[in-house]
Image 1 (cartoon, rainbow, N blue to C red):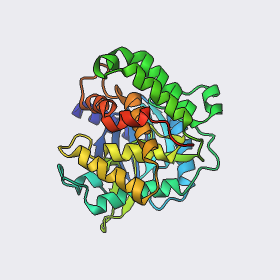
Image 2: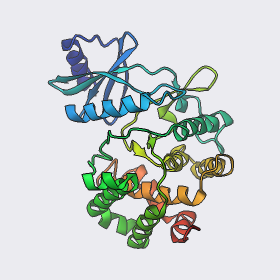
Image 3: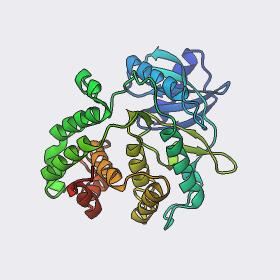
Image 4: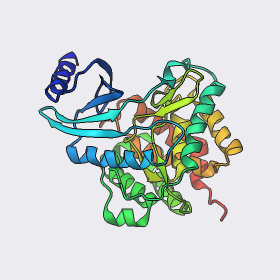
Length: 315
């Protein structure tokens, strides 16, 4: 890791950017503070054209004038290590740093933070959604894009099942039936206006200010697209504390808040939870030997999720 970090610093210096401080590393790259209210990201594998697509997506989200900061890419460079982007620095403390692990229930400020982000995204529909990002590395076909966001997601999930279906069949009881019901139910969800869907709203990706208010939302791109805001709500409730001892209790509290106080449809949230589990089951490992895969399997075996999939919603 250190050698790669040193190489990244050298590449930034070659581009005329001074890496003042190392900020973080993720699955997609290394991030450095370069001063002037900017950060540099040295991408591990994203090609130039992929970062250009992300830049366009960011511009549309920034144009919503949300009550918190979101990323903006100001420069894109080719380097001998790959693509480098220069981005607006986002300010705040990651919520994961102020939420104690293994809390039985989410503290009120954390619930408020999650809900405030979901509400802002739901209250600001997209007027021009021409930019389309690949979802989990899959570029949607023109036909799927013309049929709407649900068709795009179903096309991606179909390709994921082609690749990982046999493994899921060994892990999930009656997987083919669950998959069929998920597709059927997603198709029945009435088309809603488009919103910016983050797709990975978890404590590390929400930054808080000194009064525990949301100052920024970062790390878009994993499952980001323009679609149904209910999908974002479903995912956010499930992954808030997905590996904690009380993950289900936290999930239930946030789900209830979304349904009872924010007006989301519980049936839709649970259907989308199944879709998310199938979509992302092998996002972090080909062989499913990781915690995320286990969480997805548990989700697909959950009684309430299966009950929702089997239920025909009222029209």
